[in-house]
Length: 118
Length: 116
Image 1: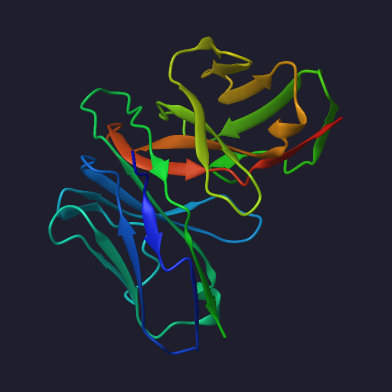
Image 2: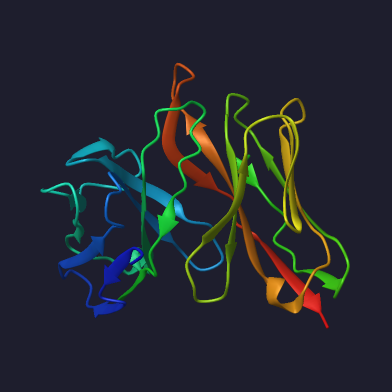
């Protein structure tokens, strides 16, 4: 079946502009995650959705970053007034949320969007 | 101290050898541990997870967990050139009262190079 898809694959913008990054999760996955990966680093958690609501947005770096998932499927990560430091690969992942503890939900990653802020 | 630490490598092993990748974590309450493989320019893909002390085997891969030492490792037997990639260790973050969350904290990854 189809995996997680992300668009665009590459986005080049100028400092101060607004960008939107889209994620389409695997069908049936209720949990959706956004991560950011800078060169030479591991993915850094940004936000997690369970259904339509943001269950944990503690990783969003500041109020220029915002994400929505209005119908519980596709999600959009929005970045206002972009800065050069926002340049990174933005990864989306989805999973079937399991009720068991400890959490062993397998997070499946999309191909990412490479954002470059000039 | 970083929450999840890995040696960045590169770790170079000959084809057919055992590759040993190590990871330490700082949050003693962490409950589940994941190993992801990431090829250059690609997204991470899950190899396996572990949450009980001891060993867990899946094909050529063995994950080992020692919660007392806050240490998790991944062994790759009969290493192949196609195993050359960055291996990311990830830890499931617990919240302030020790409950599980869905947030994964990743290390910086270890670059593995398998020499033919």
